[in-house]
Image 1 (cartoon, helix red, strand yellow):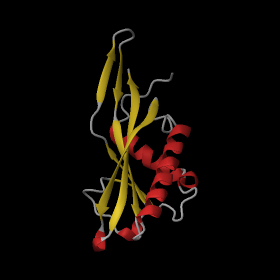
Image 2 (cartoon, helix red, strand yellow):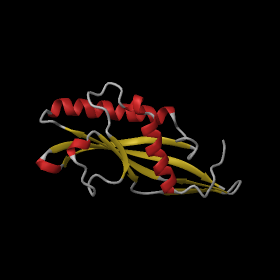
Image 3 (cartoon, rainbow, N blue to C red):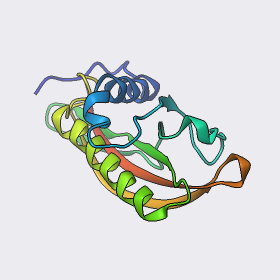
Length: 157
């Protein structure tokens, strides 16, 4: 297994995730009635995204980073986590919006399965869990949001 340069920081990995997703837009948009409009960094609960810009994918830092030290060989493995948000306008039709959001999540996970090293920035990545919620958007609209908790592993020398 190739070791990753220890100087690659979390911001670099986050930005690589955004680039990976946007470069695979044909996979991301497969089967969706409306293509993803933007791929950006940030937290949808802190940054208001106009409903005209939905569907949107946002990537932010995750909740916690664990570290594991291996004594033989002096390697240290860190597990940075990232939150990948999928935002979908419900267009007053929650059932269709739920189905479209589920399809979008499947497509995002397929990109991560096909690009497990996130273009060489980590040793592996794993979409560990998904959380669903509702986001109140501009003009009083209610929108679906899902967060994929993406765990990565990065070997430091």
